[in-house]
Length: 342
Ligand code: KG4
Ligand code: ZN
Image (cartoon, rainbow, N blue to C red; front, side, top):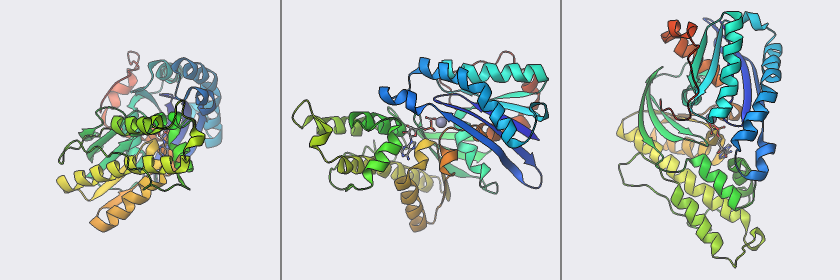
């Protein structure tokens, strides 16, 4: 089965073709991503109106490139999968309307996908034999959540951020430090030559059995730290690598400790990290190291499959399609939604 995935929930216009077969499972044939980072960089975050306009310009060329690169024809596609939630509604609508139009014209089924499910299942694109149950630490720009994954479509939310998501904390910290957008990679790069022990930023654990997260405190601590310098403070008056490394360490420590607390509480021996922040090297290596010490297997997708992409949407779409085949032919009422839990 050939599936075309479409993703426009935030600031990446993406399309991908995957092929599902008995012999090879789900195989990526093309994975095209048009990023808008340079547009949003000067604002320090995504501007929805600008994102929407750029999606409109990008969507058809990106789909065409995905089809061409996969060496197939649009008419060969047997299932269309599109992100319908959660995300910026004006951005989601571009992908959703395009997918509806193509599926309608070609009389093919279309499935709406929850972006979070896409991130969680992205691991199956590279590790198809992964067995259930496992914990998913989903860390992106909009979400920081812990799910117990019991099967395809069977997810239990056990913890979430009560305020900022981890990626959002990185983005806001990067803005304060004038390092640009997206903040995670900028902070990671700056932190390389810094000492993570130089500033003791707070780690919020809420209470000892809680699987919830909170990152607004560490963000405020960074602001207070910067305000401690003579105003108007300038980034030249501080040693940026030390600040970036200490901030990154504080966020990563909490993520690792909570993920392993969850695994211990539920006696689960596998943790998968997913979402944009899962491409962070300190987090990946810290999780692996702790996993080795505690007898827990830790997996993460390649960086290109951690940040927003359409291959993960096609993958999640396929697994939904298996369960909800009939609903996919009657997609006309499907709408974009800003908030939607799994
Ligand atoms: O999953 P994603 O591409 O989009 C959302 O669904 O939000 O995640 C984007 C987030 C941004 O906040 C970005 O700063 C963060 O992931 N991110 C990182 C890294 N790469 C992206 N955070 C830390 N380290 C990274 N290397
Ligand atoms: Zn995402």
